[in-house]
Image (spheres, one colour):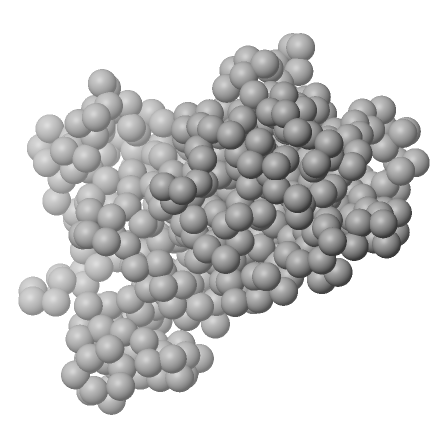
Length: 465
């Protein structure tokens, strides 16, 4: 990308001086921060057909139609469709040499009292060639600066980056994603959803693009529905009870699903304020372990997500190695109960003090963050393959210096032993299943759900040939 500018003013100037791109800027909330760069860069008449800020709600409704919320995807898409349609209707004949675009954002920046959620939707609908069909890029952003003026500045920069990417990097979508951070850093802005659609992006897998956001640190996590659709985390998690099971899922086995089902039953029985069927169960994979092992194979995460999807679960892929960071991410979006489902080996890892060297308060600080808001751990037993001893919460060996803390957490029912399980699955170990798949041993299929086995065979996953 050495031939592409990094600074927003230089990007805006290059777009202004390019005779092809011409369109509309429509911005709601936080001022007209994106179009301002184009006016200040010079040559704006070559790019800007119209700049509008329908700030008043009644004015906005009169132009774009009513909607339940003003800072939402529905409003953004209505703005993009309306403004691009006007461009083609009003200018299509007189400027038939131009590629038209409509840029829009609807944003809630920090209010005077500092009490609101600071986030926004931003997108561009554009033609790649004169008279061609529309393609579109949509992102959801969270502003992390504490001052309104700084949030506005960050919004303006990411908006310029988005427009520049659509104009000059659309054939290299990974570079388009990377460029969104130009002139910014992950302490100022978070982008937790990106979606590229239309003819120009017909070959793009939006799940890979979402994983790229996590890899770059632009987002802490991405989520996929069982149908493979990329989800916007805050909308999915909003005010929902959440139960998360972390695993590598290479591959997902009967044990993983029995753990999920057993933990869900215990979670709903434990919580008086959770109705049956209300909880959102999530299968979560962390990228952090894989990062430590070397280069990250994003397609491997997609393969595992696809196999998990055959079980009907929502999938989260996160950048959180430590459980307290995962919990903090969930607490950001919901005030309902949160549960973490895990096996005995993962519980033992949580009590490894070396994981918390970066915290001033060490393991005590991490547990203070993890177990707030009545979060609970639901633990599946482990059958020791050599001794055949069933290891449960009560039998787990803990460092002597932490035994009192461990006992306190059990007594407070922060750690709950799952008992309603299928004991016939306890002999299933994921590494063993993976080894059997690679060695073409047919009995591995008995260790995973039938639809999982079919998916592995159909796609040639995990060494199956």
